[in-house]
Image 1 (cartoon, protein in one colour):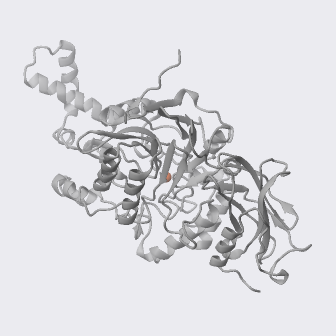
Image 2 (tube, helix red, strand yellow):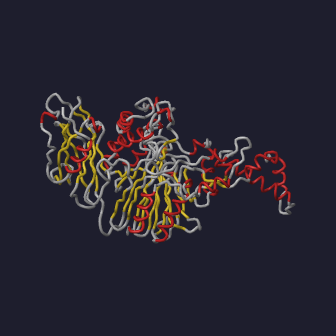
Image 3 (cartoon, helix red, strand yellow):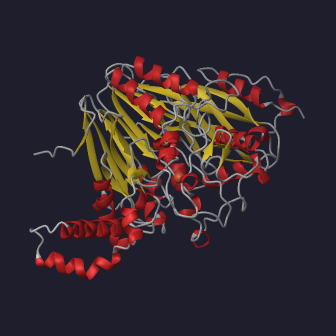
Length: 589
Ligand SMILES: [Fe+2]
């Protein structure tokens, strides 16, 4: 049987778009069709990477035997498909895991479309998508998601997002899948929820990654969200392996084989399963790209993870294993090293050019890791103390200093408290309190300070309204972005996770201390304006000509399919145009 190469298929896909039915050039003997063939659409439909004239349409067929499968696609302005704008036919095979990706072109701007696929007399469900606007635009509303971990819980966050009917596009900032084995990270309740991962082992091969994507895309809530709204996606680390960098990962060892082979398999499966447009045929490595929402928003999607990133620094390399002493001088020298890169030279030059030349009111970066300076006292950052212990001992240390200086304003109550609690201030704890503030996550932009400063400098030099989006942390954050001279250069809004556990889990914060810890961390980190360390959720960001507004939405549980929005945790923050500073929304009167 003649097989279709991957390159042939992509060429067919690209050329198959348009108003006419395009012949695949492959004749009947190569095609599986007829009465013996049974086709199912088990993985729904999806659309992505909209422009003002085109959108990627996606589906996957599940045939009952292997071969070349013909798939017809249609895109129309009505759900009854009486006004078909473009259609075509294409082929899919096992060489691309029976996924179908079509770049439907010659569409109208700012228009809602309906699309579907037909194969061997079976018709897929109908998807809804929308092209980007051109010219003068009043409003753009984006939903922002990250870190959807199948075994960690139900995808109620995706379900909640399906209830919104005014979203222009979903930005998924990565960790769309996780690579761990069935007994791995965040899987303790997976069996009881019926969400144990497939395959059972950790993902290494193309077949492994494909199987995992197929399982995730069997999720009803995720399928529904894909069918309702175009996605614009970038990968983070777990689409390959935890803490990926350009030539390795924390969760990859030499005994596991070639990292490069694993990475290329992972990225191939990503391109097969996500409705993302390759920047060129067979280029499955470079995903940085821009989207223009008329004159209002220029969205620049970055890859801070796979393409150029140098290996992360590690605090363990700066801590004396005998004494615990921290070598702050060496650390400072390494972290500010101008040769350390997160984006790689080409991508850094590209984003500088985009920021300099794009003319939209808002310059929006869709990317993975936190950009704001998240410096915490080292006692907390190195997990030597909890936030509440740090606050308690810090207050005690202040009282002790005042007592030592014979401060006449000390009250009897304060002195009694000091006497009763002074034993907690051991020499070890006092030394820990005196450690400097350090970045809490060296995998984030804090670990690559030079390139962050280059981006800040570019935005500032050209007077741009910079809004940065981030995922990765599994918690919600809002930061004022300030350059090395503490000048405001933009703001950052970061989304919580769909289901992965956050800091409340890593720092083991008891439930009753979570709100106090959120307030405590917001106080301790000077540029931080807000955080939610407790809840799974997503964020919308709405742009107008006068402001950008972030709204965080959370669910009350991911342990049950029955859930409610946790409305008490809803949060809104805004940034006014030309202010580069976060503020509370102005209440309507
Ligand atoms: Fe994650």
